[in-house]
Length: 108
Picture 1: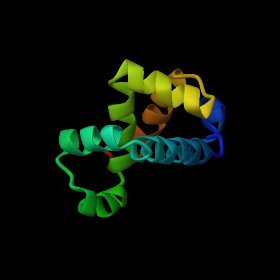
Picture 2: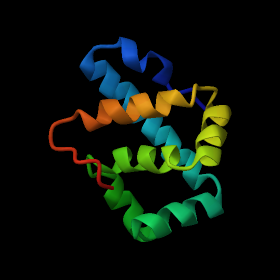
Picture 3: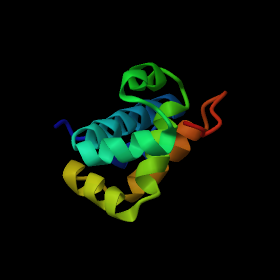
């Protein structure tokens, strides 16, 4: 898997920071989808069904919700960070970058 660019998130222009954060959030979603139990838990907590996941992923706040979900569970956060070779704090930085987008409320 391509390593997300999150380690640079804090040092980039706002546009580049948002792009790096989006890339990390997509990696987090891919990570969740990679294991049935992880994906089912995420879907149950968000109220989404497998058939509505694709449509939801097009919403600007969805990726913010993915990062919130990963960050809310330490074991999940550490597993994601380890699998992607990133600092777990990069998830929080990416979340903050996405939360600064106009119109984002943080709700998934």
